[in-house]
Image (tube, rainbow, N blue to C red):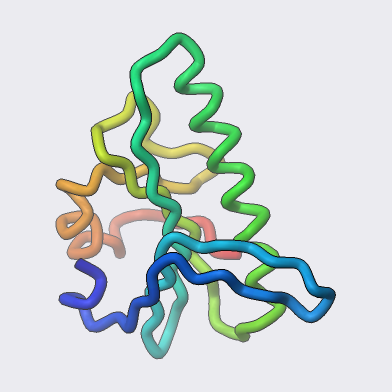
Length: 116
């Protein structure tokens, strides 16, 4: 979907940072202006799903912040989920169901997204 919007994408990329730390990114989508770091999640139903989702968003934000070491471009963290979740944003990071990703990208200027 990102490629259809003119982005160059890489999937399941492990990045080794200067201090030898390694982080994996599910999808890296980059154009001339920004880098989207996408974490993909399939959540099962359960009592603690929302708290796990919030923790996952914060962990992803930390990985995105670390990515700043290797690019001067603004980084936009994004969570893409298999299903629609109760939470639409957490810490200003959007959680977008895969079926709505294209619409999200078409209307992205309507959102105030967190850039790292």
